[in-house]
Image 1 (spheres, one colour):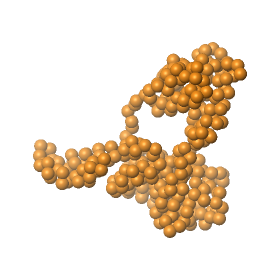
Image 2 (image 1 turned 135 degrees about the horizontal axis):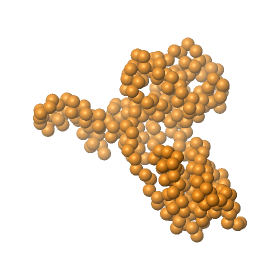
Image 3 (image 1 turned 90 degrees about the horizontal axis):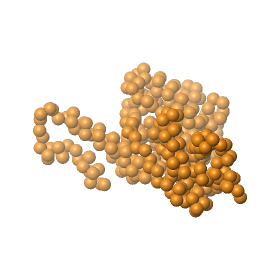
Image 4 (image 1 turned 30 degrees about the vertical axis):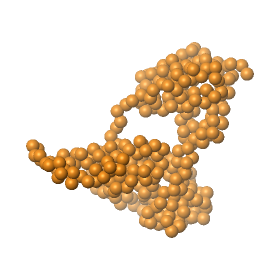
Length: 337
């Protein structure tokens, strides 16, 4: 096999075999990796002044990747998050290349070692209980669209699922047993079983009967106006419209940027504030690492700190014992670490 064709052959195997068969990544993740490599090859072909088909494995260097990352951030105005996602895709590709091209493994290791760029994280947005109620109560359920949206948002709040996980749900995903359960397929095709509140289960069951798909296990639960499975952007549009309608009787919603992931954050925060163990929340949300779930704890602790400060008049001291007695919930959590 000549050098010019080897790179492109390995790219094909990377997507057709490694990512799908060996890693079992979702289609959305694979598409994100595809976009990252396409943009990188386009950049590198321009930098080398040759067509993408003429690129070789020798062109995949740490220097080239760094220039690429700087270009997409400074000239394409991509966010740091996007920059890091592109780097993550290239690093994964290099992990694969090491097993196929040991002669250049040193250069691939340099690319894998490139650090993720740090950036200030935005304050996590979530909804208060009364805000969730305002959004749901504002949905008129006289037509099918209203019924669908009401069930959709209730399910998002109940499960804390990612938007694509909700879009992928089929009738067979719901089990209406003694304890109703929804089977969610998350990242890496990992399945988790989330119990449904009786009210949510009843809503889903009634909705499936109304749209007459209760006996069709392979039918998607949520469809758009064209009769096709509802997509991520469709869910985002629905949430935007329903929140805008609710702003008239809940002005607080005007100050928040609300999307599908906001409901996920909301579920996590409400569970945490209700005293649910962090490991349970981790499993509920399908987080791989507990450190991801810990972000909600940091927000909750900050809220409690501010609440404490607001309870103390300026220049007023309190004994340590009184302070400890008032905050047993925080201390109990700290003891559990």
